[in-house]
Amino acid sequence: MTITSINFFVFLALTVLVFYLCPKKVRWVFLLLFSAVFFLLNSWRVFYYFLFGTLVAYVGARLMQEKCRTERQKRIVVTASIGLIIGVLFLLKYVNVFPNSINAFGALFHLNLQLGTVDLIAPIGISYYSLSLWGYLVDVYRTTAQAERNYCKLALFACYYPCLVSGPILRYPELKTELFEPRPLRWENVFQGFHRIVYGLLKKMFVADTLAAHVKLVFSDTEKFSGPLLLLGVVMYALQIYCDFSGCMDIVLGASRLYGVRLPENFESPFFSRNLSEFWRRWHITLGLWGKDYILYPLLKSTRFQKLGSRVKKRFGKKAGKKLPLILAIWILWAVIGFWHGATWKYFFAAGMLPWVYFSLSEIFSDCLKKASEKLHLKTNCFSFHLLQSARTLLLMLIIWLITLSPTLSQSGKILSNLFSFPSMEAITKFCRAVSFFSLTRRHAFWKLFALAASLLGITLVDTLKYKGISVGERFDKQSLWFRWLILFSMIITIICFGVYGPGFQPEDFIYGGF
Image: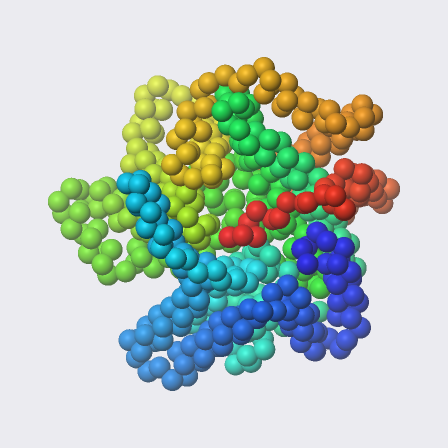
């Protein structure tokens, strides 16, 4: 049951109705029941993985708070608990990394090693679920959160069904009030949730899935669709993955809002970012904050990193003593994020090591670039310079996405070199026909192109307002009734007329649902 299917919205409508009909004090119990039913309908064969992980987190947190008397005992418990939860995640998603790597290495020397692999079914959302429980255990260890004494409440936090598809990654202290306090029916929650869902469906089912067809065409043969067409294909993929993931988040946040539960935002206009640090603060926000709080900062505060910084400082100076431990900690962080994105070396390099190289070079040369700007008297606080910075950031991200789109890491170099060759006239004609929806009637193609352009302009406008700190939802609610219904009606008609769905279609799965 995907969150763009009719079945999901029937399930959502029925559960929202039951939720507000039941007594306020037990509404969280019904949320847990809805989540269990949703999960069983999707992954009933592996439901016990979730029960195991939640039980480990429950027992571990209780032991740390009630039984452990020393810091050493607490460290042993939190390490063992996280190890068990991540061990299950590794078993389900990464057990084949080693044999596949050995087989690929042997193939380089024409050796047919044929190490066996294991086919295991990973439940939907297990990565998000595992990281949320990891954060909960660390919060209890740090005493920034109290251990939950009610197992069912912890289970609801871990398995809250709107978040199972692709996040966001939850924090127990932030969500405790939202989930368990009595929630009265507020019509503004219903209206804003509905608006958010429709906007998410437009981004996913129309914009993302329409662009996906063009991206597939280009990357079906990068020898033919080379040069400018290949670059256009990567740009389209950037728009596709953004509309896909942020559209999913809009649906998730809107569905949760119908129950009166506010979830954390996961995107804030990332394409306006002026540097990569800002981009990752605005793209998949909950993953970035999780990585900083539970990997980066603990590493930098650890005794070993403090000693390393002191040694480097004595030998190479204050700046080196500060930057080297930071670069090493960032390497560990991005290694984790790289493997989290996919159990292949391609993802490890593209989503892990390459961003680390970007950040490291930025950290090393930041002072030099600042001094060069001052000596050249560059006007850095103006629109043109900010535009140049955003273009540079996007270009660096396009390289990452180009490698991600490559079938394997070894083939990505060849695809990168194809950027500098020119496509054939046959490829240009085929691409232009696809972009102009040549297979449709002229009238249908015109309106689909118009709707696509209008949707992209609308998404850009919304992101511009968000970047300026304006609450789009609140601003939209203040508009006249006829204007709001005109916008909503236009989006719904666009989804119905041009969305990718129904018999004969194969809508794209949510890209981040596989991570």
